[in-house]
Image 1 (cartoon, rainbow, N blue to C red):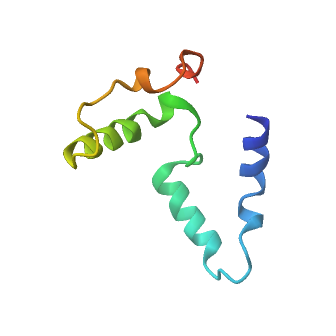
Image 2: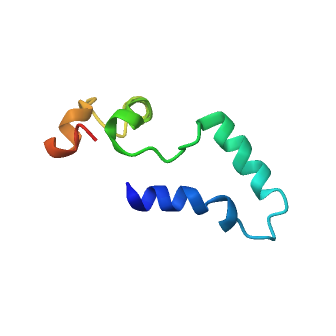
Length: 79
């Protein structure tokens, strides 16, 4: 978490100067996704993981829909 906080604090200043509207796009991204668009853990990503499973199933990439809890180590389920 310490590394992530460090990254987020420096994010706006790390946008290359050649991207003229980089900071504006960052602001728009944060407005849509919140101040933390790179959420850690299963809890913060559950909806996205469910969508990936649904799409994979619908497209025939997987034959059954696994439970998210079965895809990750138990020690990571509460992250």
